[in-house]
Length: 116
Image (cartoon, rainbow, N blue to C red; front, side, top):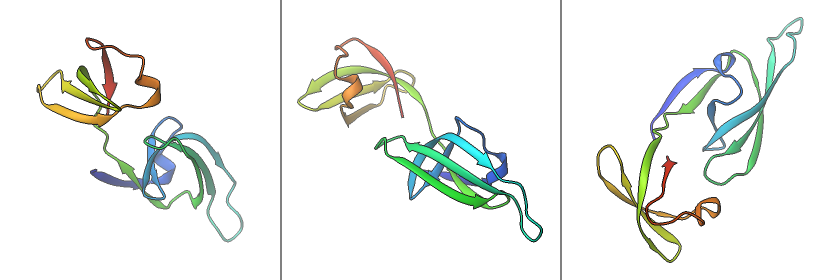
């Protein structure tokens, strides 16, 4: 997974950030005012995009953080074998084998849906 380093103050709710070596979607950000001898702190809460675990962090607002470079595409289901699905990328026609997430087990053979 490719990543990029940015300042924490540039992020917003709905963007992505790496927390505990896992890419997470930011669900809330609370900023505390700067003190007499320090800068503002930001409390970030996020949900892992692969494991759906809730994570939180408290960092200075000028701190550098890592954000994942996500590539979202649309794929077509070619074959379902057990708990795995074979997808075809609709742009490059590459095929991938991935485990089926619970929310996608209801899709059929010719359905299209986004994947990362």
